[in-house]
Length: 543
Image (tube, rainbow, N blue to C red; front, side, top):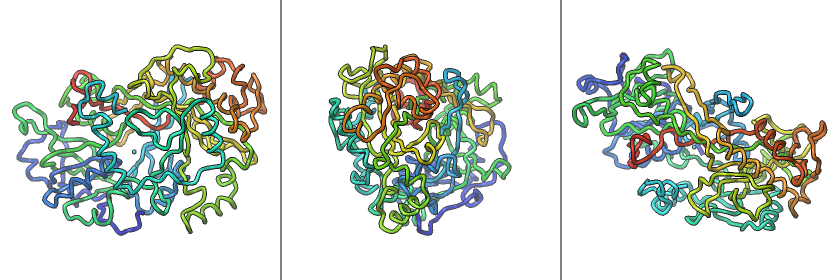
């Protein structure tokens, strides 16, 4: 898991690119481009897609591939190997540590938007239903199977906290089916344990560890450049006929004030930089809404309105913290140094113990319009799912007392279970725009959370359901729930977990959501695929 000596080019663009003096134009004369160092494929972004593409494309020894990653190598990152400690990577050196613009429907709150800054870190039938031919679940299943085979058999037997089984049994008592597979073609309503991307030693697997193996990195036709920033995509007009822009290379550098270089792509430039950096790079390269580009003095290569638009994100209502009996949580492993050391020793020696499990172990998926579930009084919501077996709510369980918005854990001596109600198909969408003409300045991220009242109502229903679930046996016996009607000084972070689900008001739940909701870290659609340039960014071939 990342312990081999690999062939990475670190912060040295001169090793694979040519010196370049940038001009204001994003168009490059053909005679200049022909003097640059070149590869058949230049891949920007070494995350989930980038690592897979680099490995697959370089299987042909006659095809040259350059993979560019702004972050560091995954090798030597100890925390990234430990499943339970994954959250400690947030706000670390391998996190871009983005933040949103103040959200005015959330009292001006600024949200964390963690995104991986390291090599390897990242409802298909709905796509097909909207015209994306070839992108249904059945069309893609063969590729999912290939990924599962490449990442080793995905484990379903990782350790779970003692609270997990009672939680699942309570969900079953409320009428939800139990499942060991959340990804069938028919939908995934129900409750169960998540499969974990871990190897035989219970170390986390990423696409870097699974695809950029020692053997792959030894290929002479593959170059992997890390700590290297792609500053913009460069174009030629004449590759596909007069006046047609065609991506022919990229401008790169080791840093804001470092020398600039350019590298040519003989076949394709592939942008796989994630939901934030992909639209940022497109805009910096002159592809996007012309008025926005003109305001920043960026020459327009193509006026494409939807770049950085249609940004959706899974929004969590907040940490519904439930008082728990100590023996059912893993709080002590995270709060007491001696027990933390013991758990770490278990994992390092044998790959066992609590640290061998992901922090999110079990969950349930439901529909907010399911009238058989205890949601309280009816609230109007929009059905944005792909069909009657597709969920729009996830109820996730963390077996420790995590506080809302990344504020850590409840104080030592208190024990809790965190329930996270998440909306999966929000009606609210936002934007990603530039704040400057530099890739080194974070873009302006405005997810526009809770702009549509339907999203508020779905989260209120999901939160009330969570409170009812916590009063359902045998889950209820693992907890020390109170049933109060108003928050008190004693309840503190345990409100609304302490609230009587039949007496807490919608207004109280709405106030909790607006004060505690946070991103579930799943932004999408900022460079949307579609069949029409008037409503999307790329076509069904991702061009």
